[in-house]
Image (tube, rainbow, N blue to C red):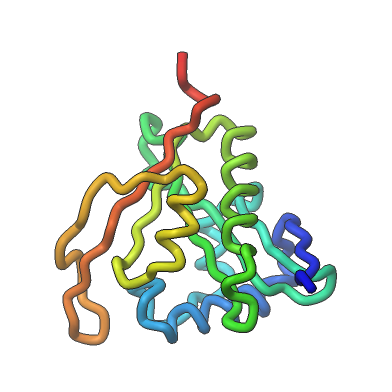
Length: 167
């Protein structure tokens, strides 16, 4: 039986569950360079409320996705970076794909023309989700940073809207 999946706007009261899922992602060593989940205010400052989504069964949050601006320069006003995290107990159920698809719809309704994602090559599931949702690999940032003393590459993926900014 498929788990019910409701995609909704993230609310402030979702933060504890969202942060816990973020902590699970950090623990994998393949989701982010972060080694600790930030506090709510710091995270909230970097992720506009209209671009924050959660997946739940109506009660429990089991995934989240958000967009963050890549730059404060106006020329990049329509370019945002994707984050998507799924609770370990809910992985491989298609929730990540649903969240990314919802972010794409939301972004295009707010005049965002390019979404980008930086993904460790070892994060095969995230790469598959993004590619299924129309992202393409545009490059490799070799030894971009160290995580726990090991230099890590990051694949840069992007998705160009087919409806925003095409004229």
